[in-house]
Image (cartoon, rainbow, N blue to C red; front, side, top):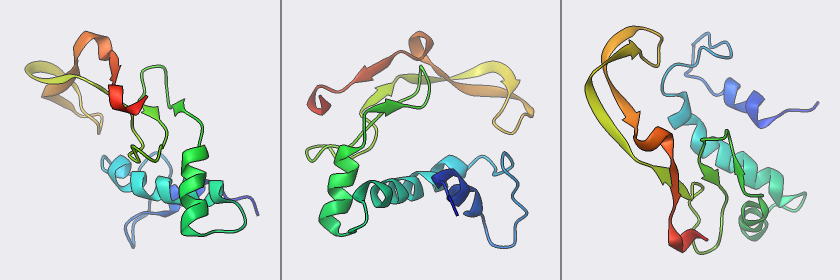
Length: 124
């Protein structure tokens, strides 16, 4: 059976919930992140899982982004956090539109400079 990280993430839902893919709710990204890192490290560690192979597997994970404006994602011994860049945001209490649950609302966190991303110097 070929089980992907995506399959495991979708199976990680609150007990007793009927959680179809795409219906996870607004907190799925918070819940998903540590599980995604765990399974990425386990997959990249190879067949001999140990703390050292887990760490080395994360360090071997290639630099990647989820989308053209997504965060830069990789691990290093000097900076073990997954995300290596950031974007500036601000609160606009007059902005109106759909929220993360597709409901109309007023007020939103918006990105500065069309979401331009900046990489910290210590992560290079």
